[in-house]
Length: 263
Ligand SMILES: C[S@@+](CC[C@H](N)C(=O)[O-])C[C@H]1O[C@@H](n2cnc3c(N)ncnc32)[C@H](O)[C@@H]1O
Image 1 (cartoon, helix red, strand yellow):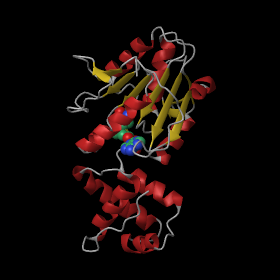
Image 2 (tube, helix red, strand yellow):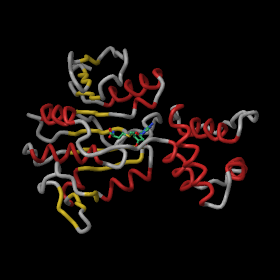
Image 3 (cartoon, rainbow, N blue to C red):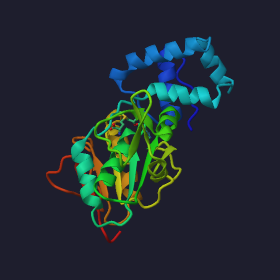
Image 4 (cartoon, rainbow, N blue to C red):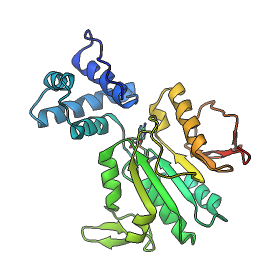
């Protein structure tokens, strides 16, 4: 992680922006900075500090891992919902036809609704066994996802989850064993705990990154795929990205790219 100090002439909030962006290799979009400032200020007050005193603590290396996790969580947008993109889910089910035990990686999975939507759709399509692995930079989101407990959603059938008290549903244990989660920053070099996925999906995450960073992420995701595997992103998220061993499938919504079979 980069621990460069932000320029002293910036105001304290801007110094925190620079610090968090450098430490976690993320970019905080200009139109999210107001919301981040409010959330950051509320959080810092809730631990009896202000941005200046927390910065002093940071400079002497006394900010603990839990506080850093919360700062990162507050800096990123985690909006998600079950079956957010039906075309993407349908495409995944189609691509999994004929693969005995497909492996799907969902990058930037937030609190888990995307991986569990994919799992639910695969079960409904008759797939008894698969692996869906969700990764997110936010430990808060990953902890929520691992619980597998959500407000009930009509699209999630009884094959995948059971109703529980308080109008909630809990994904069955066997589903939670096939749908796994990992705190992971896709811009850092540690390998993801799912080797050779058949499909990598990332939606509504690339939009928070500048073009060059998006392209770097897309290169990394392509390199993870099994030969012949597919990369799926939301429409418009890949801009003019191209890659020597990835072929864009024309006219697809979502965006779909296929890795060459011979690399
Ligand atoms: C807006 S949510 C999208 C969730 C889900 N994919 C969907 O479409 O509903 C974006 C997620 O990407 C995560 N994220 C942002 N940068 C990341 C990175 N470098 N590595 C992994 N996850 C990241 C955020 O923490 C956030 O939970």
